[in-house]
Amino acid sequence: GTLLRMRAVGQSEMRQLLSTLNVNCIPTKVVEDSGPEFETTTSLLKKGWLFKKSEKVAGIAYSRGKAWQRRWFILEVTTDLGSEEGTVVKTGKLTYYHSPNASKEGVRIPLKEAMGVKSGLGKTKGTEHRLTLNTPNREWELGSGEESTAKDWAELLSQWVGLPKVERMQRPSQVGEASMVKAQWMEVRVDVYKPDEISDEELSRSNTIQKSTSSLSRTFTLSRRKKSTKEVEEPAGEPEGAGGGEEGDEDEDEDEAAFTWVYVALMSDGTIRQFENESMTTELGRLKLGYLVQAAMLDEPIADFEHAFRVTPEKATSDSWVCCPDSSQDSLDWIAVLKA
Image (cartoon, rainbow, N blue to C red; front, top):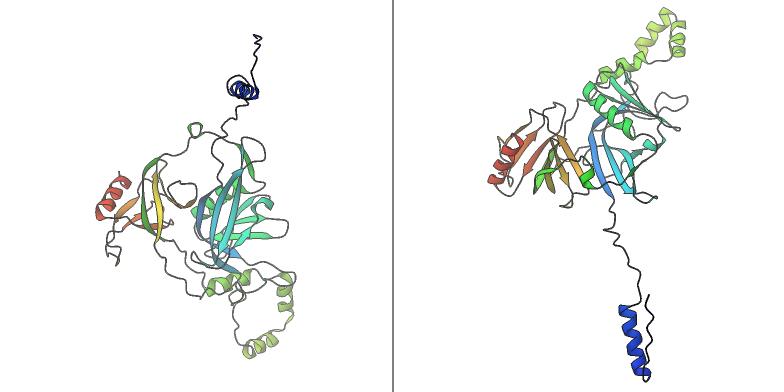
């Protein structure tokens, strides 16, 4: 470099000279723009009704209540910033509630402790299509009356059991994500698909099949005469597993689904999704529409929601959404895009 010699007359001129050198000659460390802060996101993968088998306790067939209870299940994936630079951690969360509108906190099934998902068939009508999650502390057995529903849940859960996934952070241009086709703020009501309750007769038949060998052997030791007397003296009791209990009876009235104000987006992958706001970082729900999706104005308009329309996916066991944008023209525009 070039050597420069400078002389200042007086302290004032020296301070001015040093200030000029600091600004123009002495290199400073450039702080690179680290970009926007990472925002934790939550995506809803699936929600719906499943039957859950009561927990078994040593010496007792079922802890309390019915052998099978219908519960509202939600599978979500939370994406957080990873400990290593340029990575994210995705964690699956499976929670169940008494109903879609339950005010009480749900029960979390620890997917990270599960070793896998096992599918099978049972004998109780309405829960015959089974999937089982084994954790160190408990075996979680879930059931559905529809084979397709159980299969969908099993496939999704298989992807999220075990330890959280660590993935490299990718730019949107590198990811084959669905793009937005149409989006708008509107009020939405979700009409959930609800399977039929299991009848007491089916539960009774199931519990009869599931009786232990020891119980049967004790029964056969009774003489025919004693058995006849016992049948006369003892009134028919309520089937085991069909009674009430802490987890059991779902006679509690469920609030009718209400409209909520959400940001709705139709995506290029054939799904329609609800988001908390326009940033679309927190997904509240989605419908997989299918090729034969139906969209039409309501046959009987709802008071205060006269221009609402219903979206019904192709799959028979899917939920349907009643959507109410700002005007009737908005509804017609959405119907046209959905049916295109």
